[in-house]
Length: 99
Image 1 (cartoon, one colour):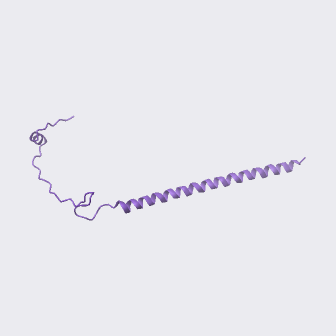
Image 2 (image 1 turned 90 degrees about the horizontal axis):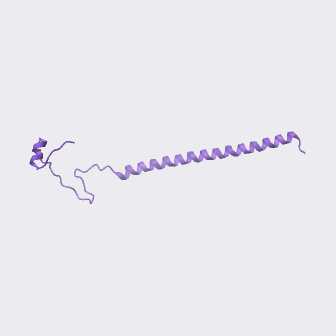
Image 3 (image 1 turned 180 degrees about the horizontal axis):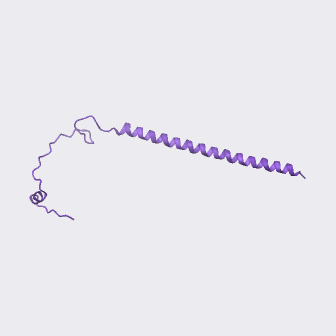
């Protein structure tokens, strides 16, 4: 039969081993969390850089371009002829209703 002191020392050593194992697992979990956060942050920065680089912003030319690539001619906006809504609606054959 082992002495009481030896049993205490054995239990203590087992407890310390379990605590060390738990501490290592916690450190590993924390390290992986930090690494995943850094990876997501880097991906977000890369996405912003790509969007700014590729997205352009259009600037530069004086005439806008349609999706095909040809230039759209400049057209002047016609002058305002009627400023009264009811008169303009009557001239167009429409009715103005408020809800």
